[in-house]
Image (cartoon, rainbow, N blue to C red):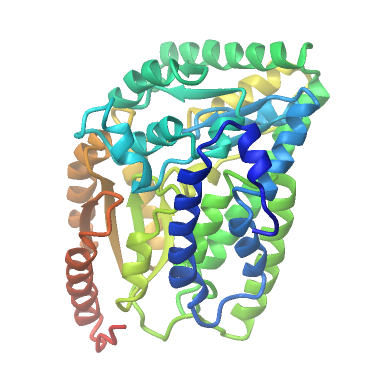
Length: 437
C-alpha cells in the first residue's frame, strides 16, 4: 500500500496485528497468481493498483462519504438494490468473505458444516479484520439460504444487520412480497440521508449502475465470443468481476471500458493469452469472493482457459439492466427495478429452469469446450441444483466436471489432477493434442 493506514484502522476499531497477518498472506498469493502471468493487457495495471489499495485508499474514500452523512451499506448478495444507495450518494459494497483466514474464529460460534463464505464473512467481523465491515453503517443480509438467514441473527449482535426477504418463487404473490421489501429498503436509506429520494436522484443511481453493467457485458463478450482469440485470462476476468463490488462505480466503468478498448485492439491483431486450441472453459455455480482464485489458477496453469463465470460474482450480476426509458415517476423506476431483480436466476429459486436454459445458450454462443460446475462445500442450494443442471448438460453432450471445494489449499493437488484429466478428454474429443501447462 502507498502509505501506513494504521491510524485509520485504529479509528475503525480493527485488530491491527491480526489484520497485518491477513495482508501479509494476501501479499504472497497475489503476485504468484496474477503478476506472473505473461502477456497481460496493460490496462490491468489499474486493477492491480486497486487490489494493492483495497484495504487502504478505497477505505479512505468511503470514509469521506461517511463524514458527509452518506450511507455505507455492506452486503453479501446481488439482490440488494445498490441503485438506491448510489442514488442517495452513498456507497454499497461487498464484504470480505472469500478467505480461510477468518474461519477458525467463526467456528467458535457457527457450525463447521455450513458454507465457507458465510463462516469467512462472519469470522472477519469477529476478528475485526475487514475494514469494509467495520466502516459500514449497517449490513444488509438476505434469505437466499437457511444458513445465511440464521447467521444474520447472530451477526446482528456484533454489527447492525438488516435482512431482506428474498422470494423463492417467481409468482405474482412473490413479486408483491419483493416489492414491499425493496420499498422498505428505500425508506431505510432515505432515513439515513434525512429526506426522500427525488426522481432525478433515483434515476441517476440507476444510470450509474446500468453503465457499470454495460461495461461488464462488453468485457464478457470480448472474453468469450471470439473462438480464435482469448485477449485476457480468466483469472484477470474474475478479478475484475470481484473488484466491481468494491470500486467507485463511475471510475470502475471508465477503467473497464479502457480495458475493453485495448482488448478490441488485441482481437483485431489476434493477440491471445493462450495458444490456439486451448480448451475454453465456462465456470458455473457458487460465487467466488476475493481472494478465492484457486480454481481459475488451477485451470489456467493446467492447460485450459476460463472464458466466463455464470455466478453472482460474474454474469448473473451484470446480465440485466433497469429500464429508464419512458419512466416518469419514482414508482415507474421502482417497478422497472423490481422487474430487473426478478430476472436473477439464483439457485434459491424453485423451479429454476431459466438458469439451465441460459447456461446452454451461453455455452453454444461462446463455442466453449466444457463446463466446470463449481460449488462451495455445504452450499446446499447450488449443490442440489447441480443434479438437474448436469443432467441437462449431459443430454446436450456438453462435457462437464463437477468440483466441490472450500477455501483451503489442501485439495489443490486433487483438483488439479481432475482438471487435467477433464482437459485431456476435451482435447481428445477435439482431436487436438493436449498441450498441458
